[in-house]
Length: 212
Image 1 (cartoon, rainbow, N blue to C red):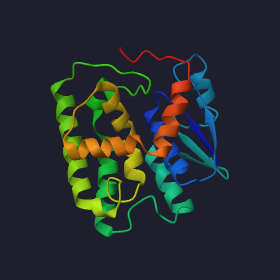
Image 2: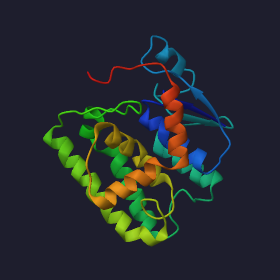
Image 3: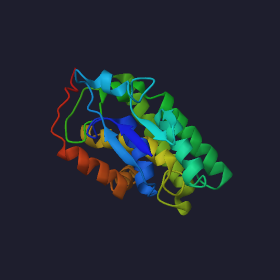
Image 4: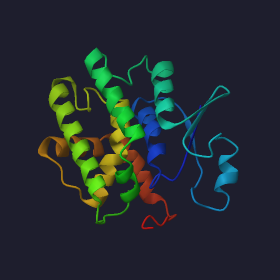
């Protein structure tokens, strides 16, 4: 099984399935294709129908899109442990993951993932509104499912992988959150698989200009 990813310092979508597979010790090989280079599109075309990362290749099957890869891994290799067992927690974890997958565009655009950096930025009102929504979402779910584990909806799983790049962005740009959300963010940043990804990203030397 091979996972095609982009630069670990920058590729938030690549992080999500990588962290899930690493956390649950699913064996896989990774192939990193550096982004924003002259040969990037040509190299991606060998694997990705969308010319984007990540892409999972398993027994001749190609799965693109982070959430689809996470779902596939959970179903095929984790006996569905990527999602909570409890029905209510599973439903809310899926809802939170879908909200991340399809939204928070201002946060993504104005706060690009850059694991190595520590910087400040003037945020738009839309970005501030999205940050407040994430803060409220994290706090409400953690308070509801605190007894089930340290993850967003209980045990660590897909929902946490979906929000790991957000936690990294918040650290990079010095975003202040409520106490419960801050505790969750720090727990997520301290997860061994998230740390393994960041440590690898720190060793990369390629630099992408994220200020434009």
